[in-house]
Length: 271
Ligand SMILES: NC(=O)CCC(=O)C(=O)O
Image (cartoon, rainbow, N blue to C red; front, side, top):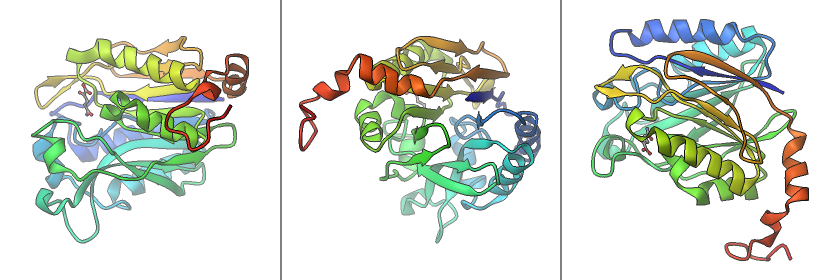
């Protein structure tokens, strides 16, 4: 299974419409791979808080139109990163909780097969944490060769979410992000930790460049179920293409069956 992570340069000089067209073309260029992954909030930038409400769009808005078409033109599964979703009934009033950081997943036919509202919002008492509502549902998506568990950026710090996804069948985690350079060491460490403890692939796709004054880490990363880094991007815009062996998840879980030794958080321990 071949995957391409598109580490997009998100900066304040490019308009959302122009970036949307450019990213759609980059997705189309990936024809021939199985899965394409985009970063978190790549239309606005994850730290461009003032833009969230202004650029909010419905689930089936302009980004959906562009990504659905790009996925079907390329014939790829597409995790299209996330958008600031102005949920039905509101155009983005934070007080109404009408905004969400929502990921979109498309089939090679361009069908929107799943969406995920980010559960853990970043910012403590400001930014996303106050501007957006929290999702409540875990989301998995069945691809032909693997079951994908979906999480977004700051979610990476919450291992219980990933364990929940494993319990729901996840074998591969796909995580779009807008992770800052300031905490790059955490990014790599946590991506590897989530892979090792869950014996799953981690495909973590961040942004490059600087937006809203926050330099981004780049360094998108793909980790295998043993915790080995299969590929890692540099700091700039880059397409990171990697071959995965989906069978490796079951093999790792069989040969080193630590997940079966769980005692807490299960109704019935596995043994
Ligand atoms: N967009 C985010 O969720 C940023 C997360 C982050 O900066 C961190 O966890 O550190």
